[in-house]
Amino acid sequence: MAPAFMRAWLLSGAVLCSHARIGQQLQASHPRVELHVHLDGSMDFDTLLDICRHRGVQLPGVGAPRSIQDIERYMETFEGWHRFDAVNNIVGGSVASVQMAAEAFVKFQATSGVSYTEVRYDPVRLSRSILDNSSISEEEAVRAVEAGLAKGSAKHGVAVYQILCAMRGASPQQCFQTADLASKCRSRSMGGVVGLDLAGDETDFPNRAYIDCFKYAKSLGLNTTVHAGEFNKTMGSDVFSAIYEMAADRIGHGYAAAFNASLLQVLKEQNVHVEACPKSALLHGPWALSAIHTFRQYGLNFGLNTDDPALFFSNTSASEDEDIVTQKLNFSAQDVRASYADAYRARFGDVQDVADVALVYYA
Ligand SMILES: [Zn+2]
Image (cartoon, rainbow, N blue to C red; front, side, top):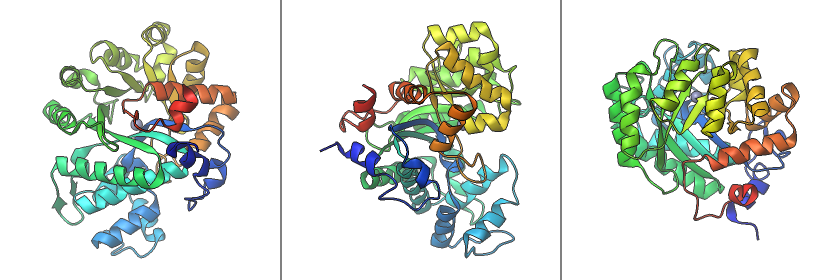
């Protein structure tokens, strides 16, 4: 019999189907591996409604939501980055709610045919909610995510670990605290913390203020990844900095590198894994999507990720991202599989106990 993860992959969707995209998911001919997806960018309306009902939250302008339309109406009152705050205020500040969200996320990944995932979030924002003035410690938030991921993993047969995000715009001191938290909560168990990320507004808050923090994270033995070169093609200096000054193991997005020959050379020679996100890139503009084409042409080590798949963010799925690279960038099926294999080899989590489907498939 196929290992548990293989069975989950083969059956994903058929067993778990409740998602509109499931018809596409079943067409996948390979296990998916996702290293760059944000927990707060992945919550669907059903999950947010369930959590609101469970904790009795009143949404400003809506009251107690009774339908997903109420959630949708509430989310529409926010724009851009503020939508992440809106989600964190619904989910955060409650151990039970955070755990529900994490478990629901695992179901979504299983339904999407993703066998191995590393999901990321900012523990500071997830530890509090202004909707009911509640708060938990950041460590309690991390432990709640871990419990939810582990429960979901056991239920749905996919591997999911977590990465903590330090945020651009927050103080360097906060970054050090998040690095310490990641070190303290680091775990090889399913759902455990396996790394540290730097996320947020790269345009106004470049790497400089966080370099010492990420050096410190490496001194703690943490795996690290840095969102860099995401928002425009002139941000190559942040990619250089992430590699040489922060010693990042992986780069999130990195599209600016495609417009800098020496940077492409560095990524290739040092075999740094780039976490590409097709739909998210497309929303940044054709220049960013074309960068993923360059990554493939140049033979870089890169993967395909959904970043923020929820309807009110990138509104995508793993299969839609595959469609984007095959239809707009002429990726072959082998190119898609190769990108998942690259991602699997660049994972931070340890799945040795499961002899899982991705390992078998991409060995
Ligand atoms: Zn991201």
